[in-house]
Length: 367
Image 1 (cartoon, rainbow, N blue to C red):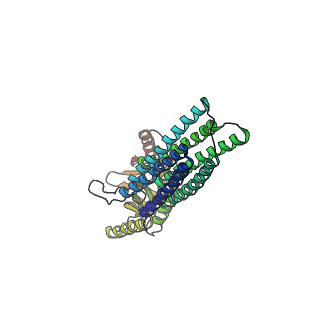
Image 2 (cartoon, rainbow, N blue to C red; image 1 turned 180 degrees about the horizontal axis):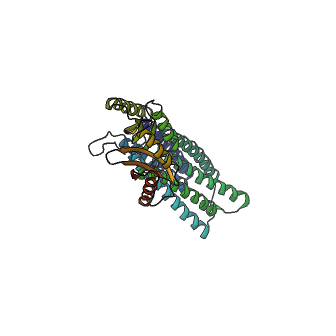
Image 3 (cartoon, rainbow, N blue to C red; image 1 turned 90 degrees about the vertical axis):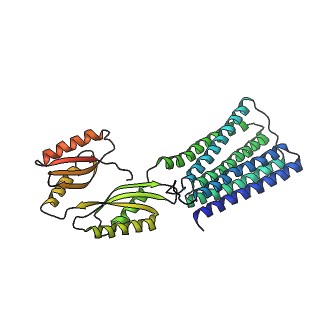
């Protein structure tokens, strides 16, 4: 079963659990004549909203690529997670307002055996449901499922707070309903903010994890013809679709046919192993030990040990103009790229007289 179907199946479990819990509460509420329990049953029906949103979002994100969206619709999943996170934040704000009101204008809650039984049942169901949905979300890398599971867990925490308040009220006759509600509401708001941050960062283009980059780089370096990997750029268009590019160092003696075969093999393997649609660029490494090869080694060695330099690559020598171009990735402390490039060009011209230098200030997008 593919990932989208597993997400939808998990969401259906959430819907079923909320329907059963709402039915149980409605039956008890009608039998006991409790409006509060009936309203809580209605609240469980509204809790199904996050599961429904997840299902709709997953179905929409699974639509194939079209002319207007050539990379597919996978990013709809991030919008789904944002909507659920906003629902959690709204619930947190509502709970906070109600809790503060109870502190300012305290009321004495009335608890019965029936009420406490419903509370315990609700906590048990929500804890099991929330943990299950959240774990499935982490396994399937679905922000929407993670948010939906967290929503259920927060419901359990709120209800647990109600149970704790009831116990304190019955044993010591102390009303902490508003205070406990306020503390729980603040926790929910903090978690809702964190839930919101993840999908927003994905939409903005967050940095790929170092572990993923290291694995991808090691896989490319496993090809014997590859002497270095640089300029890794990966963009996510949903959990199942990533588009990227990188450059590799290869010997300047390779033919166009050799390079074609190599880059095709790299792109094919990376897609199969990481599901990344990859474009591979080429930097030529001189094999002339005495001539250009020695010049390349000396320039790269000198530049790489320069202050504030993080990485050096893409050496090329234009013999007709005596011009050497290299890409330099400065350290993060460097803020003025043009000034840094001018300084490096002046320094390299002084160290290697007779040559002209053109420095391209590059950026580290992944490592």
